[in-house]
Length: 259
Image 1 (cartoon, one colour):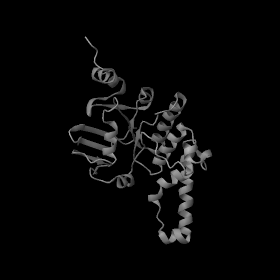
Image 2: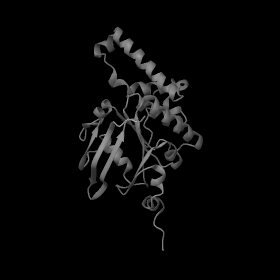
Image 3: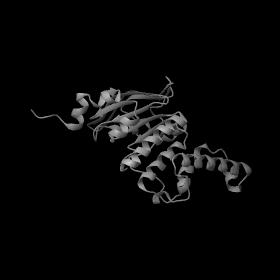
């Protein structure tokens, strides 16, 4: 049964860069355990919306709430602690660190031991480090990456690097996960595997997911609702099949047919 609890609520979000209106009056509600797609042509403002929600940009106007709390001016690191995580269009792994360490570093803010415990290796240091490693290995197993735990992240195949970035985001214990084009550069087999992984983590961890993606097979295969942006403005929202057949959406992607 779906929850009615609203995880994210964005109200009339707009942002302007000089004379450019990048996003205009954007509204969105995401409920607990919901899987929503944010789509649109290149330059539509999708990643800008992600950057606003995750505190990278401050909106020119409007406000948004996370679990009912106003967070419009909240720094990114505080949003992560509140349960909001994301991935990026361009992979941002620590390429020379091991796969395991990439996941462990995301859990750093959950560690409770102090500087002295870390320096002198007191019992609580070893206990927390052991627990963190066990949790990281569990995540890697879910993503079928546990056999690569000691491999440098930069040595993984591209598709597995994508999966590792999602695993790292999951290590922060998110309530809402934002995925920015997770299937970019993947072959059809990797994309199918990714679809299954996204469904698994949504259901296993009971989190909401907001997804930017150009691969319509993936979008229609997993998203329960779509929001479409064009030139920073929402032009359609609702059931995925109905949305992609909306004339305004077809025009945005294919252009206006000449008479």
